[in-house]
Length: 249
Image (cartoon, rainbow, N blue to C red; front, side, top):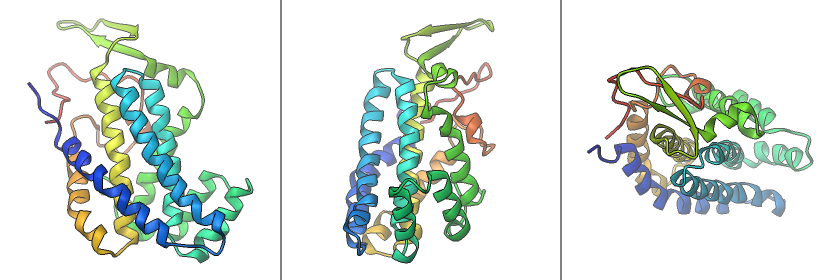
């Protein structure tokens, strides 16, 4: 019997600590505009709620709902990233965002130009801008109910000794469930990276080794093709070669 993946055990430990740390940091980064000060805090709360609900619906086999929540997580992470910057950078962006004059994509372009170059590499050796931009583009199709999203409602069941596939609704799909669980861990790791790249505090330094260890474990996962193309990683149906062990742990 395969045990829990290392990255999952580590993520469960990190979740208990990282959200209180992030909340404490964001609360201290006040703005002259009270409403603007609340945006990163509320984004953090939304991120936590999305992950919590994602875990629940994933266990119930509601994979299309779960993948939609991953997109919400990426949007929340974008605003949290802005919230961790100096007021001179974040206030103009948040003001335009609140007024509907700046989209998440436009915000990410500003982050890519001014902030992300200092973040180092993503999950593998790619620049952070490439990692996060590709991830954001990959989850964009799940903003609306589409045939792409519809694929996450269906389970693909392989049969030993042949190539015949059965597509069925309402059937547990362990590959889909595991992939979504990994994406949740990726989201938590990304939050950790945002904190470690922007904050030099004892509470962040304390959890940094755990964040780093999760990144190494995720990067080595058998569930990922490791070609740095998140659009391919998030395709609804992934069929592994016969005999390939996709399970981590």
